[in-house]
Image 1 (cartoon, rainbow, N blue to C red):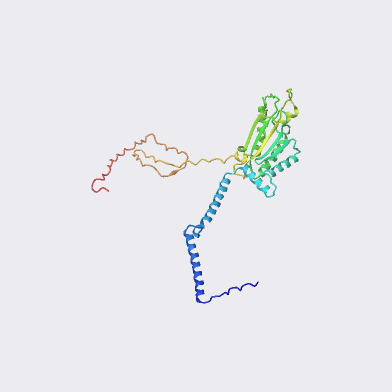
Image 2 (image 1 turned 90 degrees about the vertical axis):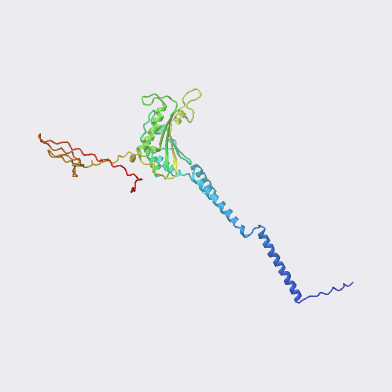
Length: 343
């Protein structure tokens, strides 16, 4: 079966087809133009509203910036160190406390003096360094006098503090066991613990540390680390030895130094003596001769030294009359502003 022939196709060319094509193109262009105008007039995302996006971004950035400034204006050392530690560990670094170098130096000085960790325990935190001294490492039994090794140790600690860029508050606590003491100097453990803490603080003041940054307190036997006695009430020597201790806290109170840490020797230095000003020069008053009247303005302008001047000796027959009275001047009444000619 054969397919029927397809109908013939005709291609129309000429001016009519060109005009129709041009007319359709112009119509579509006008339509797009009208749609664009109606879109702008209807409140769409036109060029006049694009600035709101940049403005909102700018306000957000400024808000975050001022929040950061406000948080940094009241700096908390603990929070600052926690933030520093977290940021260091997040980037794979090794965090070190700000007093790490000072701790190593103190431990080194202790080793040079033959003091081991059993006698002095050194710990640190974000606030500073804590040193726990056993009682026998600093004092003899029942005494508050520092032994020579303790004097040298505190001198080295003082030197380490001065080398640091931070400023420290030195707080010393004295602790004893509960064994009663009764001596002329120390009637109880309260006096003994206070005397030991005061002696350590006084050593720092002797070396030149500012006394405004020193604190001393004695707790006696009120704060033991472990029980001094067993269940039967007998003293346990090992426990009592641990409770006889002196604690020293080196607390950081500022990131940088300031002028408040002034050596005590400079504070107590004598000031230069104050020189009193010389007395004002005196004027000599002329003494009239015998028989002449004395006027109120009879003075001389000659300058005399500050030493006292003896009055001239008068003869027994000389008579100096009293000054003549000066007549009083009549008071001039004030001008009347309402009179003619008054200014």
